[in-house]
Image (cartoon, rainbow, N blue to C red; front, top):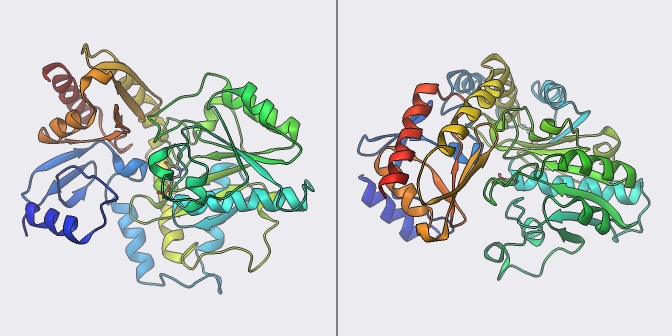
Length: 400
Ligand SMILES: Cc1ncc(COP(=O)(O)O)c(C=O)c1O
């Protein structure tokens, strides 16, 4: 079938909860994707950071095949040979003590919120069902009812209430607001170290370190949502590391699955995650042997191919290169590692038309909100490929 027919089928039978660019991907390898007509595109979005290892990394495909030939899904009713080593290796990679596996990012967030509430009642002795969790404006933590309950974006919320209670919203990057919002009933502060979906928004320097300090002093758990920023995307293993911060809980997803399988987790303190007792929480597919085998190999590939270091080095170059483009449309270019947002002026007419023009040149990226183009290529990208991509962006921004 050709691309037009396939898009028509998707539009006719699928709910319209996405507005994809008009391209139908037929196959992909490394940093490239091909459409049904054989046109090649460089992937500059990486499935919102899930494809940090590149498409179909041979070692990850092999790990998946090998595991598929043994056992794929067991449920947590039984142990599997992959589970314990996965937990141990993820703890070592994250510098944490315990792991609880899930599948999607939103499930990891739900899990972290439940863990924080449980800790609040069992350890901090907040009266049952009075616990509060502080979150930031313009956050993005997922799409479940609870995740949209803590959102401030009308598009994500309108028509989806009633909402889960127990959350307080403060401005992002504002330590005074955090201090003022903490009460004796505060269980946790949930924060993205860099806000991705909001448009790659970096908090002021020193923010995370101060947040860590405030949370420690107030006996409030710091939950860092590293689902999009984790595993090298920002040039460190985790974005919190830029300020030497170790959160109490971290939510992980996307790149943890090596770009070939959904794997998420909460990793953190034993005295928090260790409070769960059998039956209180779980997931049919969470921690299945196939997921664990792929995630274990994904962690090894990050180290073996020095993808974190590559992200830091190539990201610094890309930020500088994109920042030097002289175009009346560009308001600001910001980011860290290979996680960059190009903010356009309102008069530019929206980021979408630029993404469409880049698609026509073989570069796939996506607008976030109306005015930001997010650039997040696979961390396996080469300097030559980056140079070509940056050249395309420059030409489009100048010509249009
Ligand atoms: C920071 C952050 N948290 C949570 C999520 C939700 O992850 P998922 O779409 O896998 O549920 C995302 C997804 O973009 C995210 O960027």
